[in-house]
Image (cartoon, rainbow, N blue to C red; front, side):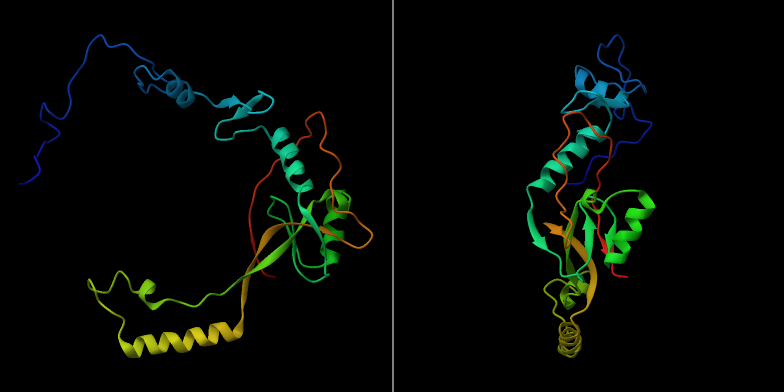
Length: 206
């Protein structure tokens, strides 16, 4: 049995309906009885889930409330001592530090104190062995196997990858950091919103 063919000129492809009622978004899309979907499609902002202020569509919380939530989450992290060499990151931000000098330069440039940064320890993202079947899965026939000589070459390569123990990048953890003489705990979350944004990211090594 073959699929039925319906061309764009066929009466089956579309038909005109008169006198229909329903919700239409600001940009002219028809949503029938779905008022909520129509309003969301036509809006630019929604209510913040915490303070109900207008918030750009696509976000649950306004920047002020996101910053308050970020500080509360950070305050709950375990605190570890920094060894002075492991990279650090600003929690939920795409900023990484690979030395104490970089932290000091950043603080000077942005006119902030180090205890305001909410630093977290990073962990290495290591180069992983390469699976030959994954590499060639689209090229192998059904039930096909990697040729023995090719698999042997991959095994040799993977042995070298493991021995090299290469760090490709660093990923932030949920461990707050205390630098000697400086507490990395933020002040208590403010009762009134404090402007800010929060994002998450990782960084390649320097």
